[in-house]
Length: 311
Image (tube, rainbow, N blue to C red; front, side):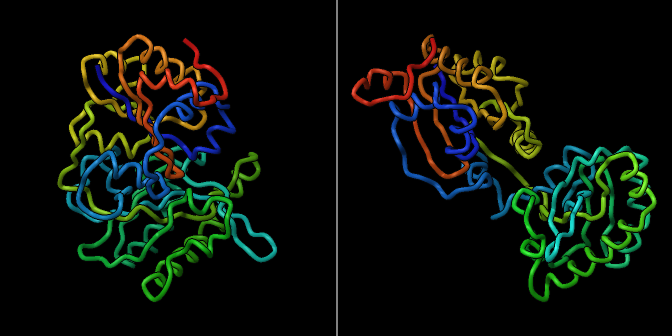
């Protein structure tokens, strides 16, 4: 019999959105383990071992989007929408901006010389993921992820200091070019958000190796897909496909989308516990909480629970 590890959104937000139900039962009857530092990156580093201290998002997604990742240093430069209010410039969207391939080429055309003169090759590989190939030995500042900046004043998330000054200048120049691009005027007329900025982030090189103790992964996250592929483990399409593998003793990693209904993951896992397909579930929340629920924990009747689990 196998075990499952669940990568979960922040605990309180998940409980508020999905209700307590089976999840609340597991938390009440299971063991509370030592908390980890918050953040999705922490969870991924617990599951995958590789060199470096940061997750090289750009290189990992590039390995999925193209076959030329190699040993180059990469950045993401994703299409974005920013809106000015009285005193700030806020990031309201990044990545999926409903662009066609022709749209991407048109928007990137005036930007390529700007970044090329600075030594960076701009490549809009997919409508949602654009890349900067960095010159060898490039010294890069720290960049914020779009998830950290969404809805906030972008000035709080731009690269700082002398190392960041060059990038702040490039971003300002790019915003002016995009603001004046005729395609954006057309997009506004069609009721679409303009692509009036880029979000630069995810610096890094592809790891030489990735290791994991898991035998299968279920996830819709391209970062997890890339790590699993480098670790040479299969990615299942759904939890239903993975559970039979668990019965054979494999350790399964399940990456739970915040919007996934309870019936898509909590109920099948509870049935697998009831049927002895799996013996325990490890729950790792992005907010840092860690729990372990074993099949025998259901008999801890002295622990009050919000609701009994469904069979």
